[in-house]
Amino acid sequence: MPIKGSDNMERNVFRDYLGAKIVSNNVILDYYSKIYYQANENLIDIYLDMDFEDKDVLSVVSSSDQIYTPKLLGARRVDGFDRNRLTKYYYYLRRWAIIYNDDLYPYPLINGDRNYLAKLLNKVVVWSDKEKDAYEFWKSIYIQGVYIDNLFYDDRVNVGKTLFEDNVKYLYDTCVEDLNYANCDLFSEVNGKRTYDYIMISNILEYCRGDKEKIKTVRDNLYKLLNEDGTVICSHLIRKPIGMDDKELEVFDEKFEFDDYGMNKGYVYKKRG
Image (cartoon, rainbow, N blue to C red; front, side, top):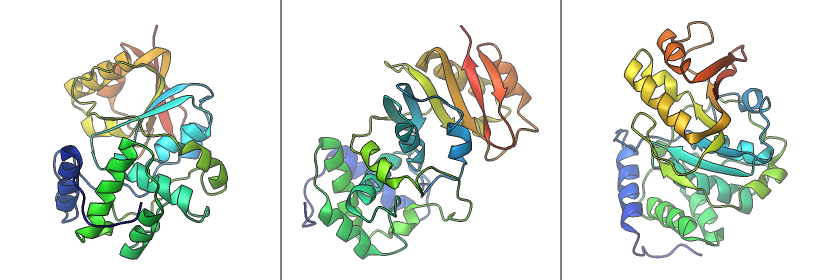
């Protein structure tokens, strides 16, 4: 579908475009903030300890590495959630970069090159309403001259370890599905209809350190969303294994077993029966 004049967008996509435009001017809004270009956590160390084969996974979307990795490792279903509404659009930009570009590049080669985005969009064939929304979003970003690099955190130095560098050809098979996405904040009550074997929350708990009520809300949400014997996967980014939040451990201990599998990798909470 080649780029051409602006079409009518769905209202929610237009709202997200306006949010992105504000974010590009270095302003943070509720539910809109900059996007992580790629993972800054060591997903190889964290995920390879897990058995995702034929499992159902719920993951924070973030850079989409957290979504694609369990798919690559055989998960049956991977759904995404995020407080930042812009991450779902980046999922599709990642998807198009994998499908339509040189397979050496599992990430979009943006770096201020507006022509790159135009060339990529001109290759896109839209197969679903969700993909159409993403296409309209990025087309508007291009047509309206939004500075694309400003939509991303400028942190390409602290790059985590992923499986993609040597396995991009396998990644292609994982990116053909639409993203099942929920705009979700674990700090508020969540009423999910599905339950999961694994939930990846990255370092979300680090943002409620010391706040017992917030920790309890997150814990109860995760408990409701997990199958029996389900596991919550957390990563260490801000704090390290030494100096874990005692309040977090105390609150989670009522419903979960804790396992720190160490050395700055991450830790898990396993749901008690």
